[in-house]
Length: 193
Image (tube, rainbow, N blue to C red):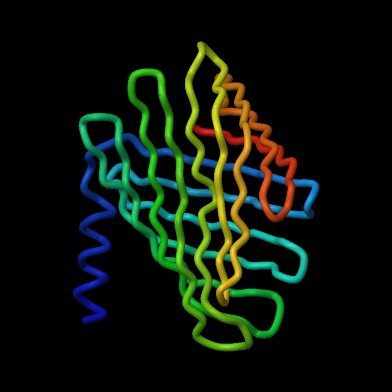
C-alpha cells in the first residue's frame, strides 16, 4: 500500500498541467494571533503547505499535502491533509482541510476550513474557519467582509467584520477588524511568486 501511494504521489508531482507557484503569507493581530504560511503548488497541482499558527496557550506547526482541483470558471478547490504538532501538552494529530479560491466578475472568495483530529497528548478535536473572505475588486483595492470561527468542545468563537486589501505586483496587504465573542484587528501580507 505504501508503495502504491508513493507511485501515485510521484505521478501527480511530475505531470505538468499548470505553472508552479509559491505563496507566502504572514498575519498578526492585537489578540496575539500569529500566522506564517509557505505553500508551493507544483505544475502537477500537488500542493505542499507548511504553516505555523499561534494563539495564547496554543502554538501549532502544520505540514500538509494536497491537490488543487481547478475549474474553468476560476474556481480552485484544494483538499489538504496535515500532520500537526503543538508545542503544548505533547499534542499531535492530523488536520483535514479544504482551501477554496474563487475569482469571478470582480468578486473574490478565499476560504480555509479545517477539522483537527488528535492522535496523542492532551487536547480535543476542533473545527476552524480561518478565514472566509468575500471581497469586491476595485482596480488594485478589494473591499469586503472577513468571517471565521473556532469550535471546540461545544464552544464557538464566531467573528465577522470588514476587510480592506491592497494588491501590488508582489501580492497583497490586508487589514480587517472582526467582531464576535472577541474583537480582533488583524494585519497581513501575502507574496505570490
